[in-house]
Amino acid sequence: MLCSLKDLYRIGPGPSSSHTIGPYRICQSFLKEINDNKNYHFIVTLFGSLALTGKGHLTDKIIKDVLKDCEVIFDLKNIPEFPNTMKIQAFLDEKLVKEEVYFSLGGGQIAKKDGEAEKDQLVYPFSSFKEVRDYIEKNEMSYMDFVKKYEGESIENYLKSILSHMEKEIENGLVSEGYIAGKLHIKRIAPLLYKEAQNCLDADKRDLYISTYAYAVSESNAAGSLVVTSPTCGSAGVLPSVLYYLKKQLNYKEDKLIDALIVAGLIGTIIKRNATISGAVGGCQAEIGSATSMAAGALCAADGLSFDHIEYASEMALEHQLGLTCDPVGGYVAIPCIERNSISAIKAFNSYVFAKHLVPYRHNAISLDEVIAVMKETGKDLSADYKETAKGGLAKIHKF
Image (cartoon, rainbow, N blue to C red; front, side, top):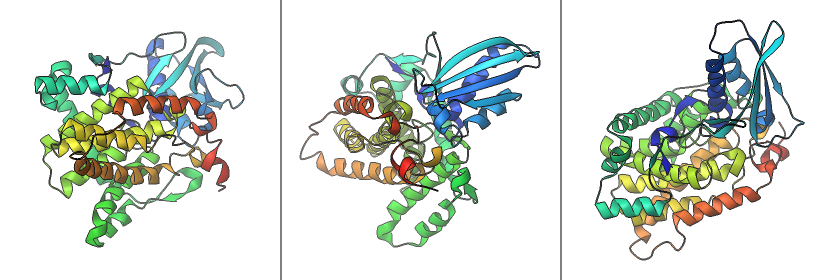
């Protein structure tokens, strides 16, 4: 079974779906269980990746925004069974009255230790891209008819609201100035890049516009603004940027963009089911690799191309992100994350163009389902130093 697109595309505070949206929802869940108005004092202990990169990811800030009277402890010594673990303790008159341990699973999804994971709405009776493709082709269905069959009529307006929010993210980012990422003190450059894109040589315009739109989202995400998980906050700049380019520079209509959003979402749910979209579990290949694959498939769908094109483009986009490490400098979702969103958006567009002109002459040797399986295995083999812990790679070598 595949989850609802509503469980993939969530709107929440950046910069990380696992480090901000997840903890935000965990705190809300804990308060709901207490369900009274007494003056509690809370102690929250973060473990694993949450502890190692929580400061840069604004985890403590989002927790305090919800729990108010709260102390946040970063436990860097104890190794948890799951990389994104947090413990919440509630005290009343200095007596412990409630304690729970939670896991932030990625994409904003959460679970309680020794309990069932928060259940996605499992609505699609399929388990692979091949099964989805075969069903749609056999029944000659439109993408919208397919998702409405399993999600109901409300999915159309939901997707329209997601598309609208993606566009607002970009438009807000294009006019936002200042500095982000705490001690890294990174200057926001999306407004400057936008001026360059408007005035540069025609040969450079496509890549510069797409890059600019990805920067706009990713800089806003790093600042903690509301973004759409696509499939995560850390990779939220890729899909919106290519869709916005289709709308603004190529005059694509909303129905085509919604088709693109559907296909991207289906690819994302398949990756989520059969591998992972969490950087703390699979490295950045799971986040930016998934986003690039989703965006490449989306572009083919918007262009009205066949499933052969969609699969080739999305497979190609993910295949060449395999092994990508998650090593954020200083624990901030900034270096290399912002630039990586930009580069990956261009890679998604190139994968679409390549597939568009290659499919008439050959089919992809590796299926999308196969490369997703490889991504899962690669993630298992990656050292924990390269899974959102800021202990290896760029985070280890670059000093600031």
